[in-house]
Amino acid sequence: METVVINLLNGIAYGMVLFLIAAGLSVILGLMGIVHLAHGAIFIAGGFAGLTIVKWTGSFLLAVLVGAVTSGLVGLIIERGFLRLLHKQELEQVLVTFGFVYIIGNLILWIWGAWPRAAFVPSYFAGSIAIMGSYFPIHRFAVIAIGAAICLGLWWLQEKTRIGAIIRAGMDNAEMVSGLGINLTPINIGAFFLGSFIAGGGCVIGVQLFGSITHNDGVNILLTAIAVCIIGGVGSVQGALVGALLIGIIDNFGRVYFPVMAPWTMYLLLILVLMVRPSGLLGRKL
Amino acid sequence: MFSRKYKRHMYRFAPVIIVGLLLTTLPTFTDLAIVGLFTKILIFALLVMSLDLLVGYTGLMAFGHAAFFGIAAYTTAILIKHYGILSFWLSAPAGVLMAVLAACVFGVIALRASAIYFLLITIALGQLVFELANTSLGKLGALTGGSDGLGGIPYPEIGFSFSFSPNSFYYFTWGTFIICALLLYWITKSPFGYSLQGIRESEVRARALGYNTWLYRYIAFIIGGLFSGIAGVLYVHYNGFISPEGVGMEASGLLWLMLIIGGSGTLWGGFIGSGVILSLQYFISGFTPQRWPLILGVCFVGVIMSYRGGIMPELNILWKRISHDGSP
Image (tube, rainbow over all chains, first blue to last red; front, side, top):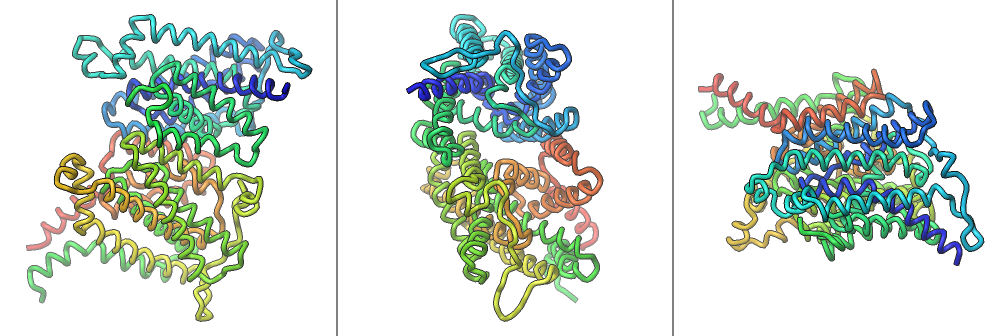
C-alpha cells in the first residue's frame, strides 16, 4: 500500500514537471498551429543555464530565474527571427523548429560539455517526510506545490483576464479576432516567451525528477511533452494538466510494475488517443 | 544524323545519361572510401525518393519514414544473426515484407488524421518503433540488441558461389537503385501518380470527381513503405550494423532535410539532397565531427528560410536554358 502511495506521489511530481513543459507547447500549438519541436531543447537549455548559476552562486531562486529567462529569450529569438517570417506555412515552421533541435543541442554541448548535469536540491528543501512507514523527499513536495501554483496562475490568466479571453478567441478563429481590431502579434510573442520561460524555470526546479540531464535529452522530453499535449487536449491549461498527470502516473507505475513495456506504453496510449479522440480528453478542435 | 525529335529527347535526357555513366564507371577512377560513400548516397537517395512520393506527390507530412527503413533492416539482421538464414533471397524479401506490413498497419492508423495530426501520429509511430528497438530488456532486447544495436551483418549471399566485394556491392546497389527509381518514376507518371497529385492539390475536388482519396493515399503510403524497406535491407548489408539511432525521429528528420535540399515533388531531387548531405557529412566529419549537428541544424534552418524550392528545380531551369541555347 505504501509503495502505491509513494509511486503515486512520484507520478504526480513527475507529472507536474511535464505540465511545466507541456503548458507552453500546448498554447503555442493551439494559438499558432506550430508543433514546436525545439521546445524540449529550450527546456534543457534553461536547465543547463540554471544549474551553472547554482554552481557559481549557490542561490536556487536566482538559478530558476536565470534558467527561465534564458529559455524565454531562446524561444523569443526563434519566434521573432524565424517563425514570424514563415507565417501560415505550417510545414516549414515545424521543420525550422526541428533544425533548432540540432542547433541548440550542439551549442549546449559546445558551451557545457558532454557530461550529464546532476540535479541540485537547495538546503531548505532537503530531507524527507515519513508517509505510512516510507519516506518521501520534501523537494518533490515542493515540485508538486510549485507546479500547482503555476497551474493555478495560468488557469487564472486563461479564464479570468482579458488576455486569456483573447488567447482563447485566437485559438478558435484568429482571423476573426484580428478582424475585430485586436493585434494578435504581441499575444503570440507573449505566449511564446511565457511558454519557454516556464519550461526553462521548470527544468531547474524539476531536473531532480530526471536524475540528470545531458545536451541531447531534448528530443525525448519533447516527445513526452507532445504526448501530454495530445492526450490532454491541445490549447488549454486544464488539458495539459490532465495529460501531464496521467502520463506522469502511468509512467511511474509502468516503470515499477512493467519495466519491459514502460518506454513504449506512452506511445501506445498516444496513438490510441489520436485514433479514438484526436482532440484529446479536454481539447478543443484544431 | 538524328531527327529533330530524337535530338530533343537527347537534350532532355543528356544530364541523366552523363550522371548515369559517371556513376557506372565510378569504381574505375576513385578509391574504396568514395565508392562506399556513393553506395550510401544511392541507398539514402532511394529512401528520400520514397519519402518524396508521400510528401511531394501525395501531400502527406510523414515524419516517421525511417521506421520502415529500420523495420526492414532489423528484420533482415535478426534473420541472419539469430536464425542463420543467410540466403539473400529469403532474408531480404522478409525484411521488405515486414516493412510493407508495418506500412499497412501504420497507414490505417495515421490516415485517420490530416495535416498536423498526421505529422504527430507518424512521429509517435516512428518513436514506438524506436523504443521497441531500443529496449534492452526481455526477449525483444535479446533479439534486437537494445541500444547497442545489431552488428556483424555480412554482404548478401546471393548464391552461385559469388561473394561481394565493396565494388561489386556498389554495382548491386546501383542496379537496385536504377530499377526502383525507374519504378517510382513510372508510378509518378502513371494515372495513379497524377491522381495523387490531384488529391494533394484539392482533396475536396478529387472526392467530388468520385475518387476514393483515402484508398489512394493508403496505397501511396504502402508504396513508400515498400521502397523504404528495400533501402533498409540494402543499408544493413552495406553498413553491417543497425542501431536504434537509424530508426528514430532524428533519422526521419535528416531524410526531410535531404528532401528539402533536393527539392520536394521532383523525385530526382532525392538523389541530389542525399548526395549533398552525405558528402558534406563525409568531408566535415573529417575536420570537426563535434560540430556536425550544428552545421546540419544551420543548413536545415537556412534552406527552409531562404531556399525552399531546393536544388533540383534550379538545375531544371539551368539545363533548359543551356539546351535551348545549344539546340535548334
